[in-house]
Amino acid sequence: MYSQAEDSVSNIHKRWALTKLNPSTSKASFVITCCAFTALVVLTNGYVTGVGFDNYPYLIYYVVVGNVALFALTYLDYILLKGTSLSKLSKIFHVSAFSYLIWLLTLIIGMLVPNLISNDGNGNATNSSYLLEGLLFVAAFRICMFKSVFGATLFRAILVGLVAPFTILFFFTPLQFIPEVFSNPVALGYGLTIVGMGIFWAILADRAGRPEIRSTFEVLQAFLAAWTEKDGTRFERIAEEKADEKPVSTFMMKFSLDKTNGYSLVIPEVHPGPFLSVGGSNLPYVLYNAFSGRAMVLHGVSDHALNIPSKEELDRYLTSLKSAKKLSSHSRCSRPVRVEDGHCSVTGIRFDGVCMLILSMSPKGMEDVPYSVLSQLNHYSKKIGFDSLLLIDSHNAMGVSLDSQQTDQLLRTAEHCLDKLVAAVEYPFRAGYANIKDIPVGAAFQDDLGESGLAVLALCIDNKWNLLGWADSNNMKNGLREKLLKKLTSHEHHMVEICTSDTHSTSGKRTRNGYFALGELSKEDSIIEAFQALSHRAMESAESSSLELYSAMSRIKVMGAKQLDDYSSALDRSMSITKIFLCALAVTFVSMALLT
Image (cartoon, rainbow, N blue to C red; front, side, top):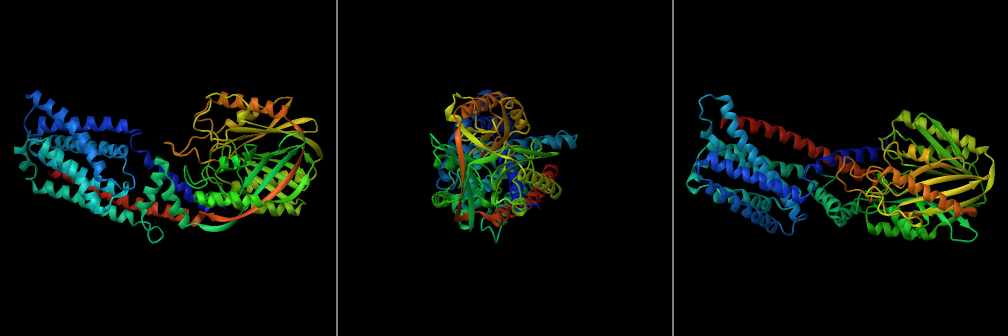
């Protein structure tokens, strides 16, 4: 019952956490770089070279001039890396921050360890060795970063990686002290070993995904360009080359009105994704615009395997919707039926032979509903007499992939709901709609809400108002759905369900998931007030209505489960190689601290 694609995506999400290690801004990196470099110059000239703290003008001169030169060296790195995939000054400052912290910590540890394990007071005698080892450690780190993240060739990464550390050493250490720095062959050997390990890691980690992924670093760089620079062209090219053409369906429930233009519930089989600025990541808003802002784009039963890989394929998909075929028309519907079992909640409405089911596991949450659920429910609905089943994943609480027991429970709950709908009485209905453009909201919403905003569909059935809320967001904060249903239900109207579009246009954030779910940034009170205003506006605009069901079949490229599995496998192998090298580095560093 597990979705292999979802397992791979979850694994990729776990690896995403590693990209949050760098400081949040280039300004923070600049401050860290300056502080670490200042401390390095002070320690080097105060304790290592023997100058001491007696000559304050000398130290102040080195600190001031050194920091000016440091900025120049950082800009030199930028010039030398010009033309590489991610040659951005901000990213070079991130590398500088870590580089000088590594050098500083190596020197501090080197100064402390001999004094901790020896009582003869001669610990300072080897401080020059740690200065050299720190320098080569920094060079190794820079080589790894310039090769893996920036996309420099290995030869270029080595050359650029050595320039700044050696410049610092030769220009901000007394020249007469330089020979002593290189005089210890053991320290030099340890330093060169670390450099060799860095180069060897860069070669092996880059090839970790072969033969499926030619270059792991190429995918990493394309991902970072899309995620941090909002340039998805490289990732789209890679994803489209590995994508498979597949037929996908889209259902459109059009509510026709007597006096004004109607509105639609759109249920695409394709999935919003993979992430900001790539392919169909903003699919809900694109469809929302295609329907002139009078639509809710709901989450069908689909997972990341059905991501549209590029803007070109997205355009093909939109064009194909123009050839949608009308399946049926309906002027009557049942009152909503909700069946709950534990965390499972299934809400259904019947339009003659058409049944719409909305699945939720809130507040526990779940990942995308497995396709097996749609397949089995389609079979069951036809068995009991329905012509069409429209299955919607409400996507209104964050959770993990369903296990087999949870999937079976969800299926039983949905089948029970279908059984009730078969016998449900149907009535003529009125329908009204309102989106966020219809109400004043000010600046109440943050980056947890997509461009389509919020919307409410109001159905008056048997003189009772039933409301369906929708948010163009990537999921909802757990528990928010329950608060909304409680606050938005009264004796006058009933909030049936709250759904999200699962847009991935709001991704690219420094969080565990890579995005903010609705309610994590925007205030709950603002969300409730907006839905209340939308509900009243939708009810006020209601007219006698009928439903027309359309279906479009599109043959487009989608990313496919294998592509996601390949990325996940490449990351796993690359991480395994990295762990081995980190263990080897730790052993090398400890022995270096003890023996030199």
